[in-house]
Length: 407
Ligand SMILES: Nc1ncnc2c1ncn2[C@@H]1O[C@H](COP(=O)(O)OP(=O)(O)O)[C@@H](O)[C@H]1O
Ligand SMILES: [Mg+2]
Image (cartoon, rainbow, N blue to C red):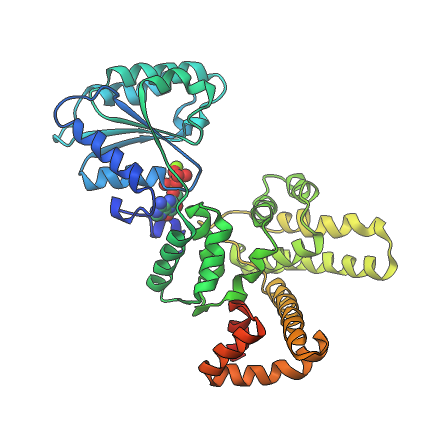
């Protein structure tokens, strides 16, 4: 089964939740108070950036303490009555089998529109009277909408786990998946995620799943492209378009380079379109789009542009049933990866050439051509000389790794 790794490796106990030691401690202290009598603040308000573990912490807590978790999120908040129905009853009575109950209002930022005032007022009231502990979660606790509610809550901030903590988690997942990984590759994914653990795990899955080994060069291109969310959204809007014009609009409203978009669609279609005949039909559309791309390139007749776009988007969407088969991660086009790999390689050679040239009194080009091949042989065979030479030439870690790799 193709499970998202964020689910597969979701922490089951508090000790597996990375970072946020302080928050976890405070939550435990607060919940322990309930054993005697309800504390002064009967609700916690957890807040902080997305993907830092707010929801999983509450789930793990309930699991650790064997409590029944009554959970609701944004979609349950449409009207004040709905909120009342959900929480009113569960906050008043105990459970049938004597388990203690923990009530969670997740994604409070999602209460909007007509349910807004009413819903929040109901929650505030429930918090004051509840006989079971309540935990509330919001990204932004200081939104003025929460000002009344906030007064009845103890606030606990969730912070972004550090790059090191995230890297370690990624390494653990790789080893559980039986994937070898270069530390620098994981470090880069962690760094790009900027504290969002969910994003880091999703990236890892997209980049590493199915591989035996995840190398730095497989992820290096993340450095230059941080717009993958935009690309993923665009792809989803084209593949699973609600209407043909919807697919067309997806391409018009994105600033993704069209040739790049074609690569992404080409690479990902086979994973989504399972029926062979449908797949053939969608590929046929891509081929037509490619024909027009070629014509535009040779004739410079830009009026052909709309056929190029139409075939690639509306044409593809119209050629299959657009039924999704569970959750399928998007894959990074291998052709783009190769392109960016050779670009990084060129940049690296140039940078090294400059440093070597300075020391050896020759041009960067000549250093790259005449010296680097020999350095490679030396670096791969003699760690001691490697260290000394690298120091003398002023090569950084990445350069040393590059010269020492056997490819
Ligand atoms: N601190 C963390 N430790 C371990 N995994 C985490 C952590 N934060 C997020 N995750 C991963 O990301 C997913 C989403 O986390 P979640 O708790 O829903 O984030 P939030 O509620 O803060 O937006 C989880 O299922 C888990 O796989
Ligand atoms: Mg959440």
